[in-house]
Image (cartoon, rainbow, N blue to C red; front, side, top):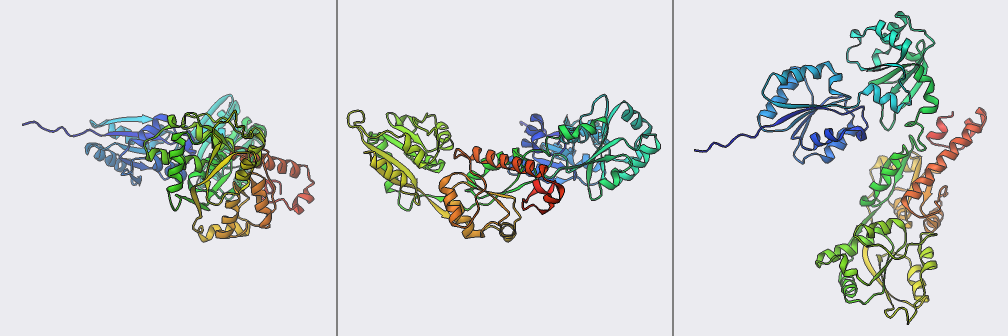
Length: 526
């Protein structure tokens, strides 16, 4: 009789780093994606756990680490013996925690296969995000028990270079007393950083004498930096000095499209809140699109003009239904209203012939679209697949240039359901620092489902048509990029924030307090 061999599971002790999900190493990511069971420390931020859960196996089990190191080790060993891949996810670096070292020792005494995946230490990682270099002889440690600290050694480290400690906020007074007793000069610079590498990271700088009072209100784990590096923070603080740092930005887009804008906003330090205002649905009757696709294959059209990413997606979905691919576009030229739409076309292996170099709008495309010439253009028909609520500007302009236009409904846009009450209240009460509108319909639908943004909310629009609609609804337009694209819109908002900061910095203190400028940028100067 052949015996079925029981699968062998693995155990991984994975360092999560200081909190920013982007600091997970590739090996850590692979271990987490392959895990059947993840035990995590309470010090691992919820935002990082959400990012991990989003990419983990659908049936992966997540649970907080409970009990002493021996209890956690038993859970991991039991999972491995059952053929599961188990991970203990810890903040910072695994070997930066005495408790995790004991767990590894316990697992090593068994036959279980295990690995230890390093992570960026909390103390060093957060010091870097706070803009505090650790030159000279550096000491960085993630401290679990403040009573184990050798303050004489720490004082010597401060005298020769810099010190960074990740500690509980409640231990700051004990550390101050220990440093002073060990002979550290009370005037030595100190930085205290809360929510290190997170969306709301905040650093206060003071001295050894005063840092406990300066850090009043900090809770949980903080990173304490001491020494000459603290003095360089004004010039080297990059994370908290990003243009939109701390701005709460409303992103009213379709669910599928909001992610790209949110990622760009986060890169500038903003905290995006996605509120779907539009849902994209197929046309009520598919006959028009069926005829359009057949016409493309049969050579009925000289041009296809795409005005949105959704239109590109709708055509390619219809192609897929019929087993067609990019080869069936042979001989048909493609025009796109803007770069985002052109990128969607390029993703299917086709290079558009026309993308406006100037204004990326219907008018901008028409300005560069050649009139129909019966000799040069034996086929005189244009396919215009777009939304059911699209304006007539483009179709009318192409007709004026001598083209026959098949204006086809490729998809419908319908108003999304209202957001939760707390988001509606925040929109109307000024809880958002900015709102980004990418089309006229996002303006109409946001006002329809949630109400008008408060007057102190910065309003940014992608182009002139959207600006007109915003003005019609009584909104003040503060930001409009030169080119109508998502990257340019976010870039324009970031530039506007920088201008605000510079204006406020140049104001006398009394004028700042009386200024009508709102948001995080203003608050930093008050």
